Length: 194
Image (tube, rainbow, N blue to C red; front, side, top):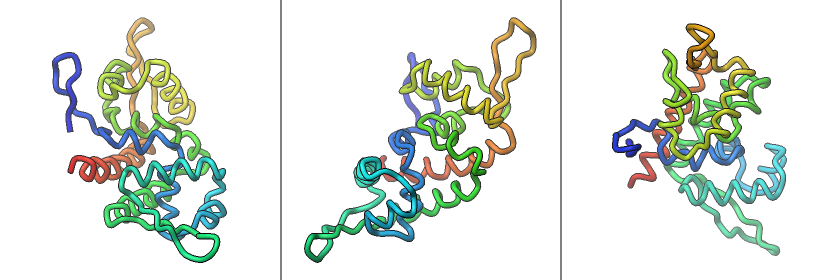
């Protein structure tokens, strides 16, 4: 998928999947939906707050990853089921979460972390390159994301001299996350493009 930026076509590895990464809990809840189909069991399995779970489920439903069944009984106990495409996304999310070190989990699941990892080139990207490829990100949000990823040693900052611009390079750990993130992005973008 590509987007127009200042008159040029720019490859955008994140594309419409930015709507998925915009909620910190989308990947963990999509993964948990593989084993849990009730609101209460999702709460227990993930430790998420009720409001955050409600918002995340609404986002996953809007993205076509899961559907809500009104359920049965009195009071009604709704159930949540993955769509066929959602089962693929859930499997990819489980693979990603299985690779994330516990110490890196909070950094990786922040709003712009995975989009930045997915668009950064393994051989290095400038701030402008990343910003251009993620048109929805603000400079401040990008600075914060890069700061988090750098402090977590997921991205290395390199300069050829004291006056040169920084170049952001993915570490070996980031490459593992990047591959998993690109797989998730590909599924979401393929589905949303239809």
